[in-house]
Image 1 (cartoon, rainbow, N blue to C red):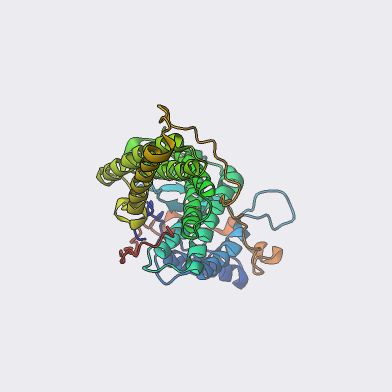
Image 2 (cartoon, rainbow, N blue to C red):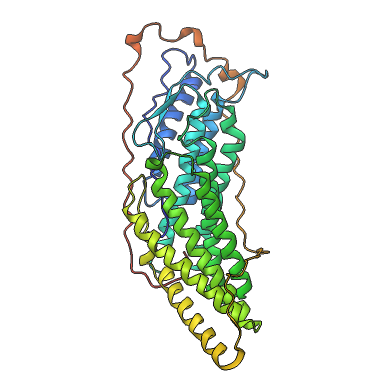
Length: 410
């Protein structure tokens, strides 16, 4: 299902030469610098290569990060900062701030910014797989896993690596807590969407589906509320997406809760639950229009055009009509004025982030080679320094819509 997920743009970055003009005092030190430049450029290329898969991405990420850690981890047996950590300036844009870059002369800033883009790639890879015409079970599992991997990267960056930055992230930038939390929660919610779709396809118990839908709606609500103090011009479109998904899955929760109530001979309560499902679904439809009309960063999802979205409207209508017929012939229950409280807790299917671990330090980065980097022999005049490269926006490949077969794997 192409265009089911909203995706913010990839971060852009200026090229980095890792040419330290005499600081690298041995052939092995020079090789590390050359390999850093080559592996960084290759990893950046992978972000926009439509043939790249999770295995290729992991190999490219590990190749770069195993070397970059040689500029972060202390290699001289002390607890002091690595002497190479602050030698290179890095520039990165932010997903919500257009093409205005942030810059820090800090290898940790490079690590967290690049890893952030890796996490974004996993979310976009999941979107691309989900957009295929016939999604296989193996591909659905890859979508599910990719979203949990992305959540794990975002979570580890927030908890472990971002706190190490000397310069804290500015408000509204990707690395500040509100944005990081929203990305984590959104990835978990979208992974649970795959679980819900699978449960519906296999006709699992209505109570389980209602509980999963309710938990997922709550995730989307939490993500939306996390962004409520950000500037509307940069977060408004993203928030509309989160809000429409919240109402869509609340409609699912009330619909399947209605089925559960009917099976328990509580027909009046079932009718009221389905009426609430109708209300939530109508609100989700309205929010889809508002979302399309809201300007802001990111690709525009088109959930209301998907059969997975449209089928729910028909399911609510048909189930409500069935309940009303049964109530008129058999039950004669009074329909409550208030919608039932959804005190639902899913015991299965909740998506937990997959823990992210950096690769081992490259074998090239030994204390002996590290000792040959001499910061006192750097360039003494500005003329020797290259002109700073500009940050060009990332040209991302179009996600071409394919025929929607109505497959419920979202």
